[in-house]
Image (cartoon, rainbow, N blue to C red; front, side):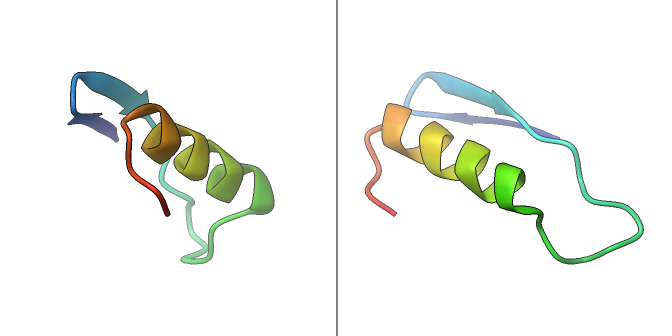
Length: 40
């Protein structure tokens, strides 16, 4: 999955078949939001 927020592009792989995110995926999502200027 690819997202663009405030000009920052983030690419994430959807966990399959699990619905829960792994710790590294949460870290990547937090880093993406911080780069886009969003405070999680």
